[in-house]
Amino acid sequence: MLQYGFEHGDDRIRAGFVGCGGHSFRNVYPALRYAPIDLVAVCDFQRDRAEAYAREFGALRAYDDHQTMLAEEELDAVFVVTNYDENWMPRFPGIAIDAMQAGAHAWIEKPPAGSLAEIDEMLRVEQETGKFVQVGMKKMFFPAIDKLHSISLDESFGGLTSLSVRYPQHMPEIDKRNDNRAMVGFLDHIMHPGAILHLLAGPVRTLYYERSRNGASVSVLTFENGVTGTMHLTAGQSGTSPLERVEIVGSGANAIVDNGAKLTYYRPGARGEGGYGRSPNFIGADEHAPLHWEPEFSLGQLYNKGLFIIGYAPEVIYFAECVRENRPPEKAGLQDARAITKLYEAYRHGAAGTVIAVHS
Image 1: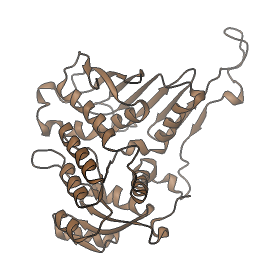
Image 2 (image 1 turned 45 degrees about the vertical axis):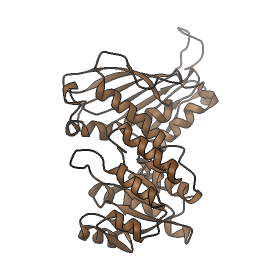
Image 3 (image 1 turned 90 degrees about the vertical axis):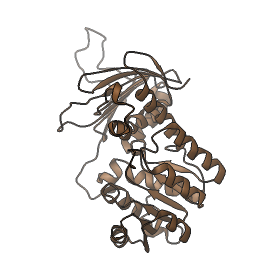
Image 4 (image 1 turned 180 degrees about the vertical axis):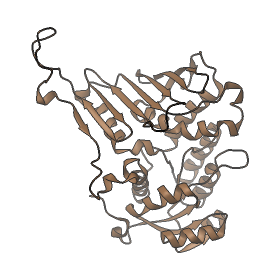
């Protein structure tokens, strides 16, 4: 049973927070109240904004420099949700390294970095300090995607054989991909479908993609475990459409998540009796019937809140528990981030119509 933050009493981690923007106000600060977290201090380069967030979310102190906060506070963990620097690169690596070197674990939003080199430097500091970083890969913590992952591992599913992910994202033209500003949207959002693919199937071995004239693309992926998949980046779709769809296929079974919250599991089975041409009824046995889950959106339950449906609260709770137990995260850690960053770099430097090695 979930405990609210205050119910943990003194058994809470002491946390600081770097960044006081709109995204964190809506999605990350509110998630802290459901985790064993005592928000001690907040920081933003605009001091008045930091003070406003401290009042709003119950922090004791406000800072306008994260180095000062790290030096003056005794923190177990630091949350970092910031914007891009003047070169259109994420600020997360430097701040996460500062946090670890100051003795704190770090939770950073995605994208964790703009290059593999920055990921590798954070990994080096993890080893050096014994602290760890978790990345905000919220898709891994969607209840529907988490259940989809469990289904894929169940013996009755027969082992994952293929999968597909659909997500609306524009891919810049190849001659613009060395421009960080032109790539910032792709860098920011490839983490979403990339996180789902990585959770379900592991590291991508090769990819082949074709790009449409409007920036949409279709990719064929092979994974190191022998699974094959597709990723359809649907730039150009309607703003009234659900954003995403995920399907996994096993052996005589498949499961689909629509719109991040509607999960249908087509268990092994058949329709009716009598065989092809001899079956008068499409209804099969109850024990083989599809299973379906979705929120009811009526009760004042946590599972009806966006913070839980789209993963923010679950990922924050998971991080806080990892910090309390001093154990690195088994998902959404830097190794997962490294694998998805390799996928990003493969798209950034690889031309359409060719087979590109991602992991080799």
